[in-house]
Image (cartoon, rainbow, N blue to C red; front, side, top):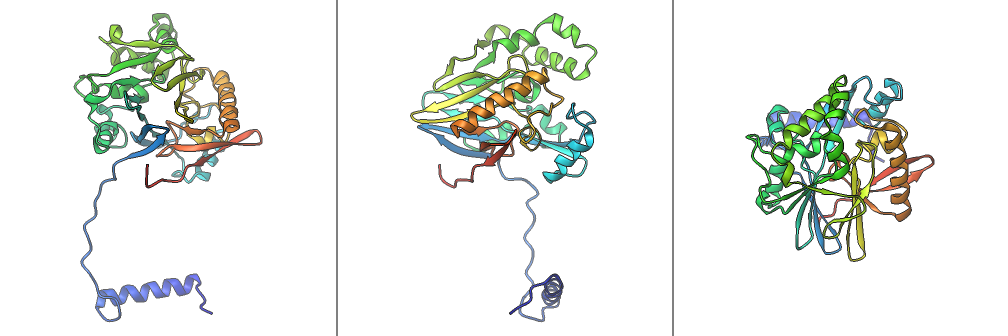
Length: 332
């Protein structure tokens, strides 16, 4: 019986390499192919009844974990969770994944990513939505509705090009009414002056939507906001944070937006509070309510901050939950 231990494998590999270099032995050296140096386009199609849906990758940010990325536990615990998920040591990686829903009558983009202006600034790490839409064969001019789950920059900044023009010039832009009311309040903005992150959020809403105020459609919770797409109240992350049920025939998926940030942290530990949540206690309660529902229904769940292509199922695991990613399907 052949003994395939580490010593034999390394010795064999060295011998094969030497044979390739010298030309003596069974393996002849070939000229190496040039490296591509770029990533493949990031889009993945899936069906919901008669609807054709596409997960569009906007990229991912990897950054040193802030001391209070998870605000209600010691940083050491959060770092351990990152290492357990094989993130680079001391770092955290957050992906971004808008969803395109083709209902047959309407082309609906749910959230827009970080925006093309951030593509250069991040050296291509984020702001990839437009190029991935193009790779998927989608002309931004054909998008009928831009449906925003909430007004944080990573969901809204993609509505404009680097020069300020609209990226989806023919689209109706829909925003949750409760979020719009909160982020456009001068009183709320004044209260946020002492918090740099919140101050930036208010300023970003003002800049991003300047001149568009009268053109926006403000939607309510519990309503069909586009054909087959119903808004679901999931507040806490922001006051008007919204998820969506996309249904066609007997099929349905839940687009959870930011009910949780990265699942390796906040799905596994639903009582952890991410720094980005506006009302942490409410966001915690929303997570439990939403995931209890999703687990009971065995529903397919789509997460904006899930690893691409961001499609999976959620199971209860005691007081916690776990994400089971759906297998990549080579057909639609």
